[in-house]
Image (tube, rainbow, N blue to C red):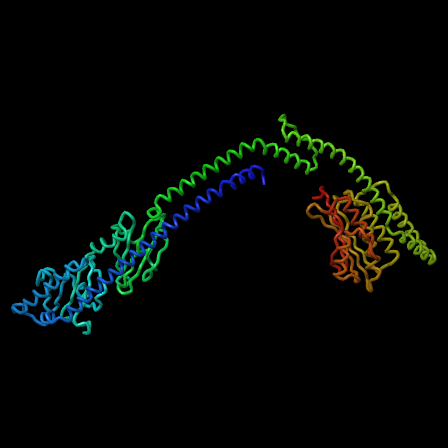
Length: 573
C-alpha cells in the first residue's frame, strides 16, 4: 500500500468514527420519530375503523327496525296513496327518516323505495323526483341482503341498502328497499382527521366491491396508491414502500365486518422533516472533510511519496540486473541519506557480482569437464574384446572398419578444446556410436536416425548430449530385449525450443519406474544403478541453458522409454 493511501486511510480512520456516530444518532432519532408516528397513526386508524364499524352497525339496526315495521309493509302491498291512513303512515316514516339523517354524520339521504309503485319516501315526503334513474343501479341496491355492505354507484355515490323480504328469492322484486345514501364528502372529512392533504394521502378500499376513496383528486395518483396497497387488503400493519423516486411511510388497518381496508401514506420527508436536512448537512461536512484530507495527503505526497517512488524505481532497475546509481537530491533530509546508502550498495554489488560471475564461469567449466570425464570407461574394454573376436574370426575387413569407428569415436571423446560444438558434429558422433554397436549386435537391433535439416546443423550445443542417451538405451533396453530391438532418433522444433527424441521399444520399465526416474533427474545424489548418463546430460544442459532445458522422460511410441532432449535457443524459429 502506498504512502499516499496510508495517509489518507489514517486520517479517514480518525474522522469517520465521529461521522459514523453522528449518522447513527441521527438514524436512531429518525427511527424513534418513525416509531412514535407509527404508533400514533396506527392508533388513529384503529380508532377510526372501530367508530366506522359502530356507526354502520347502528345504521344496520335501523335497517332491521324498519324491516319489521308494519307501516312500510302496508305501503308496499298498497297501490293507492289516496287513503288518509296510508298518508299518515308515510308521514310517520318520513319523520323516522329525518331522525336517521339527523342522528348520523355520514347519512346524507335516507329513503325507502317501493318497486311496485316506483315511488320513494324521503325525509321530504313521498315523491318520485328522487327516484333512482339507472335501472341497473336500482336492481343492484334492491338485491342487497347485507346492511353492512357499502355499495358505490357509477356516479360515485355510496349506499347502504336492505331489501324486504330478505328470504324471498332474489329473482322476484321486493316489497320495499331501505336505502341510505352516504356522504362521500363527510367520509373524506372524517378521514382527514387522521392525515390531512398537506401531510399525506389516505385510501379507503372495499375488497368486495372494488371501489376506493382517496384524498387525492388526481386519478393517476389514486391508481399509484392502489398499486402500493395491492396485496395488503384484509391485513393490518405498517411499513415503508417506494413509488417512483418517493419513499412513503405506510400504515394500514382492515375491517372484516365492513370488508374495508384503510391505508395511510405519508412521504418520508413529511415524517422525518428536519432530520433529513440535518443528515444531508452531515454528508456535506463529510464530503468537505474528505476533500481536505485528500489535499493534505497530496501536500505530503510531494514531501514523501515522490522521493520514495524514485527509490522504488531504482530498486526495480536493480531487480532487472542493471546496477545504476540514483541521482541524489539537494535537499538535506532523510531521503538524501537513503539515496547515498543506495548508491554505495549498488557500487558494492557491481564489484561483488563481477567477482562472483567470473568464479561461476570458472566453476561451470570445471563442472562440464568433470561430467565429461564421468562417461563410462568400460565401453573401451568391450570394444577391445569385440575387436579381438573379429581378428580371431579372420574378419579383417569388418575389423578394419571397426577400428576406424573407434578412431573417430575416441578422437571426439578426447578432444577438449571446445565446450560447444555444432549440432551436426554431435549427431555424427552419435551415428559413429550406433555403427560400433551395429558391429557388436548385428541385425538384432534396428536403428532409424532422422537426418537434420540444414538450418539446425550449425546450432552450438554441449558435447556428448545425444550419444550417452543412445548408450543408455542399448545398455538397459535394447540388449535385454527378448525380441528384435528398435531405436528411433528424430527431432522437432516448437516455440523456439529444439527437442531431440530418443525412443526405444524396451520392456524393462513400467510407468511407475519412468515416473521415478523423472523425479530423480534433478537430484544431486546418484543411488544404486541409476543411469548416470541421463543425469550427467540433464545437469549439463541445465548449467548451460537454464531450467527450461534438460531431459524429460515419458512412454515411447514404440512401447519403451522416450528421452526428450530440450534445448531452449532464441535463434530457433
